[in-house]
Length: 588
Image 1 (cartoon, one colour):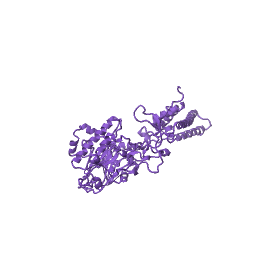
Image 2 (tube, helix red, strand yellow):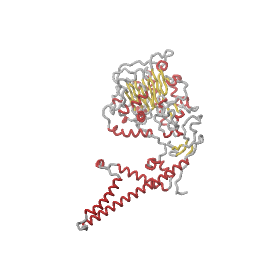
Image 3 (cartoon, one colour):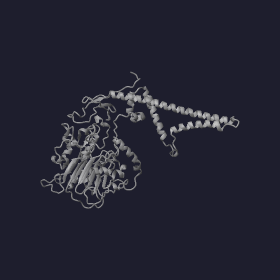
Image 4 (cartoon, helix red, strand yellow):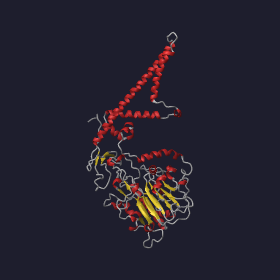
């Protein structure tokens, strides 16, 4: 049996990357696949995202909206089990039971069969916490529990907490404190537990690229190590048990700094297990879970975004789109796993979810288009400088950056941008459908309108010359009146056509001026980009996004990927604030 844990950094973009959910699952070739950070809300649980032939799936989604802007869909975990039969099966991969969260207090979703009884271990282990505390911690979609008979599997996505965020630090402490009590209760009952997932903890200095001397004094790392057998705990770090001295064994890298190029990461994705083997002979020497039942445990580096042979980012590789998560999977292969008694799929399976089994809800129907756009936004490179075409057509798209560019320009630039925006609105207006009748009306192209004006003018002259002449060769008074009206109409049409030509020439002239201004701005920006001290190469512009006095301020940094300071090919650490430019024509 093969178990895989993988932080996918959004399930939708991973499915798009592989073409389908089934292809994604098959690429991992495992019996139990545990995903973290699915970024799906309960309204997103459609068949194409959660169901694949030959797999049973279980999801936990975030339902909490915090004061800090976190909304439902920003975390989430999912467990996929590869089975031959979903009913009356004795396969170990098919869970006997499944539970969303770990407190036992989550309300079951509509369409799910309610839990018959409350797990006694929950009341025993978590009785010191209030109901509200339990629900707050368990509402972010960070845990799925599946009981496979011989072991209870925890699929976890640990909270992330930065050093200066006291609220999230306390949340993370409470989260793991509650989980530890749940584990202790299960092990006290004689159950064997396996814990997999992204715990957001690198336990030791060997698991981090830039570990400082006091790295292991962190409270979360101390807690993690206290769980392990070598420190008096009851759990085994399966990867370290198999590879105790391997260095550079990382599972996560920073995307913003391109740290994958130099393997400058950390090991925060883990597989832990209770010490006892499936033979039940843990008291005998030489019998433990790793020795008796774990054949392999390793990192699947082939899923890394940065592939061997890719062009480095500082040598033109920035234009290459890197597909994949910022994590890579970790797997464990088990042997000598006996079958279990016949059982069927637990009611928490997505096959029983109302949006999968039966008709979809109105919400899911209207959110399909939205989720497709989210796939594009999740994979986009938002830090690139806007292209010339984008600047000319949609300057308002770039917000503060557009305002910075307009400051660089001359006084004429202020007149160009409104013109471009007006043209865009006009184009949008032509393609819009204001009424139901307009949907069925044939649209008239601008060139067709101009041609019809010329045709009407010629037809007017022909009618005056022939059809409206009396037999004696003199036009009647009525005909003279009609002819003068037609001529006036023809003159108006000619004037309108002339105005259109003049407007077209004016648009071309304005666009030419805008192009020249954009080229001037590009040259100015290129000349103002400093060279890094370490490599004498042009830096990359960046913007401060962290809240504080420098929020929104621009700076320049070395363009190379982050790596160890001992590597001269890596980022040299150069930093320089960008100068604040003033517009022309204003007071000195």
